[in-house]
Length: 432
Image (cartoon, rainbow, N blue to C red):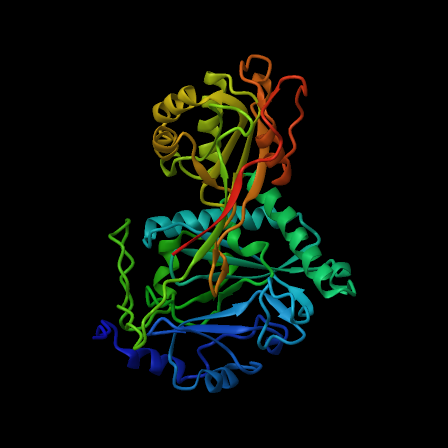
């Protein structure tokens, strides 16, 4: 039996029946963007037609009242029925433009975190001021936990590359480099949006389905003022959640209806690597996600570097997905020693796996979610703690040095002091 919705759908119907709500003013050519939306039964729809304005959008939606509405950050020659990135049979779509979008979120939903997100957004805005190759477009309140900053790319050469796949790859690489610079400089941003040419972003003027607040374009003047001074100027629908002053227990605006057909859980695919040093009996390398309690990437790295110094671990590599930080010490340590060190320093998952299975599988990629693409992407931070190399007593793990190189971070080392074979043990994992 389907669950009854705790939210009155007529409120959404009333909101989207008025075509003046949705803001298309910031898009140069809406007809070149892909539009997607989610409905009360948790189904996703892509527009089967080009969207020119709010009127044509409402016609495309029809009777399927949306709870959340998104638009692609890219412009395409044909945005309808875009093939997936891994589709090798369909002709590659032609990318015309790609907005640079920085997503800044500080969960959970509350005024205190929104003020923190505002300060992060101001830092991001200030950091971009001297980037002459980008021009500021606008900033939006997402309707929930933060802000989206939009920029136009003024360097047009990459968008003139004849080969469509090479063009998109070049644009994506350019975004990755910009994102890496921002993360390295300690800016607090979600890495899922900026570098992904197939990513979608919430449309201004539409309802955020979990809070009931409206995604809205705000001014730079507002962004530079404390959030509580203009919070009440933001739009929301009559049944929206009240934004608490401090973090409250996580709520949802409504309970989504179960589909009449059996719902198949979405599968998530990712790449994992073993801590075991191939070619050895009981040697392992330290690779693990830093504990969430260590804080944002910049603070987490600072704590990790103290561990590197105290334990004399040698060169250590760091990556981040914008929220958490991945750490790799490519040294061949005795498994028992690594297990004790992991337990002592709060790496509970790694310690447990080493005790139970003699090695651990660690995720080293984002997660590819069925029907919605990659949920995050790892961005290299740096190779640090190199000053402890001379005092490190463990040999290098050839396999994990190779892993680091493949992940974009090559380490200089003494080739005589190595252990194991060069090929890392990796696997592709699919989970529900």
